[in-house]
Amino acid sequence: MGDSNPTPRISVHQALGGGLVADVLLWRKWCGGVVMLASATTFWYLFERAGYNFLSFVANVLLLLVVILFFWAKSASLLNRPLPPLPNLEISEKTVGKVADELQVWINFVLSIVHDIAVGRNLKLFLKVAVCLWLVSFIGVILSLSVPVAYDKYQHHIDEKLSVTHRIIQTHYRKIDETVLRKFPLPSNKEKKMQ
Image (tube, rainbow, N blue to C red; front, side, top):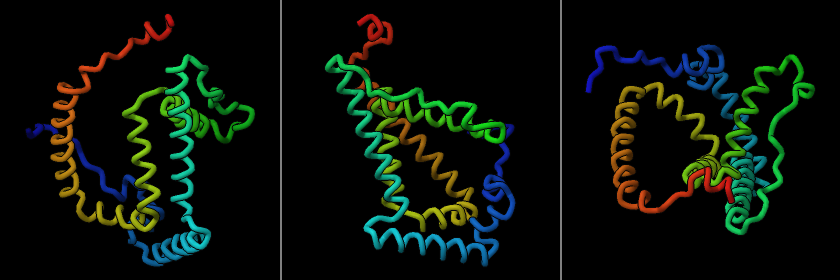
């Protein structure tokens, strides 16, 4: 249970960079927090008048794109059709330039994950992304302004509860995996390549 060398915990303030941005997000600089809340509320109001808030719109567009590409790739494998015509999803160095070398590596990593989600035919990963995007579109901006403050204040209790919850979920997943999921035969990658 207890490790002799527990891993040191970093504070939320340090995880957010420890500077002005962390102070504003954690409401330690009230003026900045009020300006951020007012700006977020203004943007929310502007998009709400059009029927969407910005976060919901982006999340729903991404969700729709992921669903279309996933089902296209899934049906393509079942019907022996070509996969969706997606590019390699890489950004060339000419476009990015010297200033954005680190950004290029990060963007290509994210795009490879998107490619895996869209055409990788991994149902678990697809469902995780779909649920996360739906939650982001449903919950909105205000929650993102309050969660860092609550976590900073109750970090030890939250980590404790999440650890217990994670163990319970893992136990249930193992039971489901042993009783249901392992009964479905999965073709190996070698069999897919030979077809």
